Image 1 (cartoon, rainbow, N blue to C red):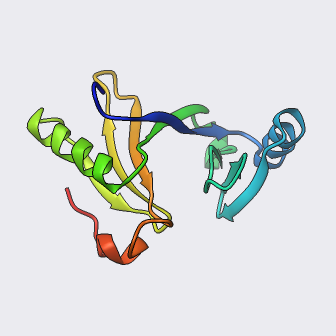
Image 2 (image 1 turned 90 degrees about the horizontal axis):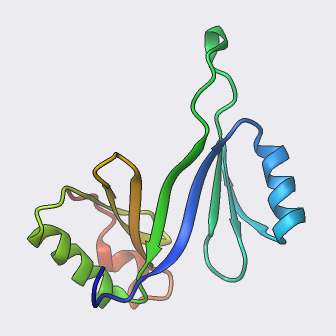
Length: 140
């Protein structure tokens, strides 16, 4: 990502048993729950919203097991300026992406050539205007 300042910020994993995985990550790594939403548990280390998201997939009807494993890797930029620089960089490079306001962060979602999910995001809670600065809209 060249001259843009990014750091590895989050990982999303599909798991068969959310409670079992949550207990493992809490015990083994000392993570704490920051939020529960449907089949998701979001875990953090400090004051971030999350560094690890667990999505429980279990078994679908008919006994078909859904794929488990990493669904996306998140790269965090430090501020709104760097977020918009990445937005512009992707546009200039003709990389397809979707921009989303997730309430606690603004996210650019894209895929690498093999279809692996990538998120580039900034924590929007501390930004001037927070959520209102983005307007709550999703733009292609």
